[in-house]
Image (cartoon, rainbow, N blue to C red):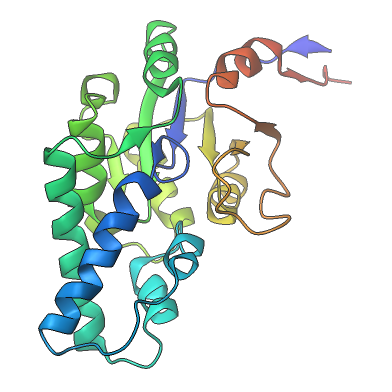
Length: 232
């Protein structure tokens, strides 16, 4: 056995990996449906929170199909607009929390020469807003905050591929909490770290990850401890 070389980059999902999404999302979610009712676009009780929470990591179009299956595209689009605005307003007001150890761990990784990126299925203003308002922007590569909303990709596999090609990265880790992160890493030939602390995932969702961490700070330990088979 030999020590695995230091990866040149790490690519992070945002929701459920860096950012404790529910601290911002759920208040905005309930207010969104209050607004939809007041605008005459929605009737009845707000759909249960688990519909929106369980959809985290999916493309936004897919999420709203789950939350509002009986409503048309116009209502879904309006819900999307409202939710985004409310979350961005919340970020500006200091709402929302990072997971414990995120800021310190990212700083340590940067100090060790690891280039940092995001790859999220979220909208561009949201992804960049989270990183900016949490004070993390200086730690990431310039223009390295990739989102499906900005690049109009249909899968995280494609988004990560674009990032790797743009920055000519050969050796990177994909870090995330959903099956889409595992798939994006595996199909792009990356080492995959599954985040086992958010609680949004389905059973077996992280199968296929090369390693799992129970807290974000464990990334540093993993970086020191991970091994690979010596060439035969």
